[in-house]
Image (tube, rainbow, N blue to C red; front, side):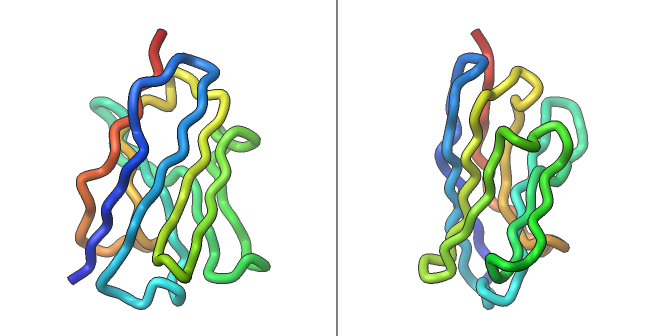
Length: 116
């Protein structure tokens, strides 16, 4: 069964940093491009960033997070990470990980609240 367990969210002031982690299981992790998604309050879920299967592949970042967020993965741990720096109130959302071209199963997500 496909599972995702996200962690690392919390309340942070504008300009602060957080590092999100995701543990995935139930599929061939190393064969899939992985992604972080987020769902801001009262909005649709959106892709934040993607990390390719291999480091030489193409990464993607949505424009609003370029230069502030860094996505990475550890195939030995079936884990995906999102380092978020210089956080803004507009980054407030529940963050999820999944494959790029997501599975129908989603984790609980981890809530990030950026507020002074």
